[in-house]
Image 1 (spheres, rainbow, N blue to C red):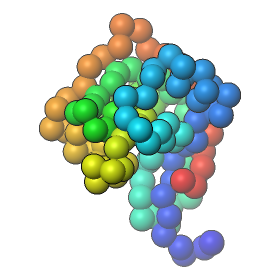
Image 2 (cartoon, rainbow, N blue to C red; image 1 turned 180 degrees about the horizontal axis):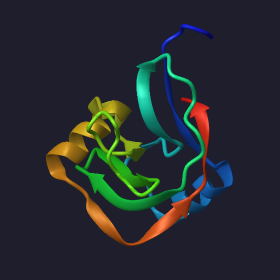
Image 3 (cartoon, helix red, strand yellow; image 1 turned 180 degrees about the vertical axis):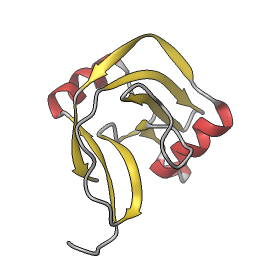
Image 4 (cartoon, helix red, strand yellow; image 1 turned 90 degrees about the vertical axis):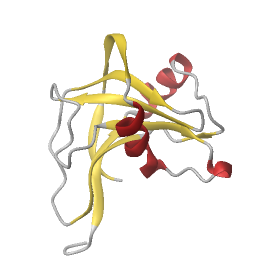
Length: 124
């Protein structure tokens, strides 16, 4: 895989994912809810372990995202926000990458308390 461009970030623990899907009901038909992207189209190595928490939510009716703080910040190095694309409506033409647009254009609502999550470095 050396020299190959890929997307890197962190995968959500599958058992915790199931618990979080019960807590935060998906609003759209197509559920993703499995990873946080650090960087796309890169040759960089996998990121290291992090401390992470869901701190907010964003959406527009056909896309839902959970905002994530990684090591205390929601700001990704590329200027977007760390997030988990929770659910979307593919029939309406929505794609996971559009979460960044929704968050930028509509902002996000903080949760009353951060929810710690377990993430593992991964190729997405």
